[in-house]
Length: 606
Image 1 (cartoon, rainbow, N blue to C red):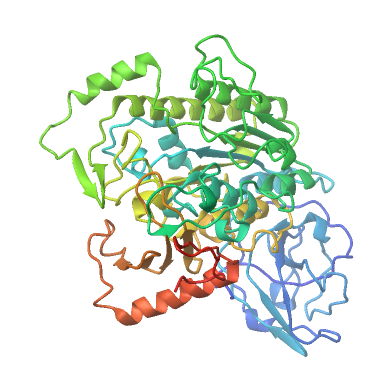
Image 2: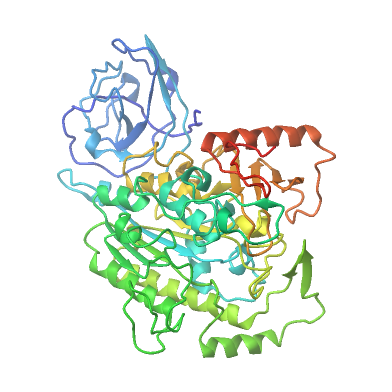
């Protein structure tokens, strides 16, 4: 699909073998150029699609109508199949840049046709600050520095748990809120699953959990060991992230990055831990889904990949300290630091000072609001007032602040992309019911918005506008191609097949992300039952595999209180067909009736 372009630039396509440019000059736009004046004579091609790259031209100031370049103009450079072939542009210029000097920017697709060029319009593009600064300052064609990546993943944090999304939240998250004020906050961001392991796999692979095979948290009972009196047997699932997957860490490592992991892994047994999946360092990443050894959230940890600290040391602070040390030790080389908190997952534990703080704060809250509601067979918390959980949230936020401060101390904050995300919705219907996700419905383990809509922030210096927001629905498979593009690393479309680069959105442009899908063929510990879902535009359909179908319009009904299937049978049929086709395409495994011992083929359960 072609993207609209309003970029003030002079477009010339050149081959990859041209001579090196003179010194680059400061970037600034020129007058709007008439794209219709561009014409090319391809040698022997039929239609070809080329990705494009962007670079500055050197200083020159001739007449632009003659086809020459003016100071500060951009050039478009070929970067794919025709890069080594002889192109013959009508406008020839003396100033050229080789491909190696180009800054990779997603400008969409350009169609080469025999005898000429079909012009593509692209949206105005903002160059990453670290690349812009380098291009304006470098001498002799020095290579721009690669951006660092800091990926922060929180466990079980709800969309409404941070102040940036919910100014009335009971919890205090000043460091996360400050990060949102610097970058872009996504108001319709989703986890690929309402429980942890599948979403974690989706981030690291760029694939939907159903395609990878990890559709439940690792450790859940397989169907042959299922003991609950349910109508269906849950589908089987993979209990490890396959080595055949080229993880995000492996892609960055291949690109020359130092890679670091700290915290919760939960993607398989020994030999499938972070050090086996592309991370140079692993502090705390093992098979467990929570801090269940030793004194749990306090040292001693009883974790074979995390040496104990002093007695009573707090786990989120320790993980932040280790991440900060890695950042400061690698300030002179590009790095991927992946901080994956065990917080705020159960067991519900916090520091004593924070517990006392929030117990006192809870006493100041109004008491007239109903504290509990009902979600199917489960009670659901309707008020945020859990002191221990609040302390866990604040301790995690303090740890985030510690790591962000390390970026400043290391002098790398201005060329480090920071991502903040949660792996599923807040826990509201089970296991202590510690938080409320209202106005979102339900929470962790459910396909309703409370279980899958997440707090997501991306700060890419020079790309994202401070304090900006995005309302395009996106999902966790999108991180992989997005981060590759921001880092200038080559895409891996066969790997991140279910992801879409969000760089256009980060630049303030539009993006047709397409429909989003979920497949959770399991009975969750939190009350949810097997189901699938699709969101297409404002419409969301949930197909419960026990038989029911629900349809919601999220624009009009964020809380999913008004079920519309009967009033919109055509829309139900359309979305069911879309969901069914997707399940077949990804090879989704389905639950079966308890009396059946035969696994049906992938696709919709009949």
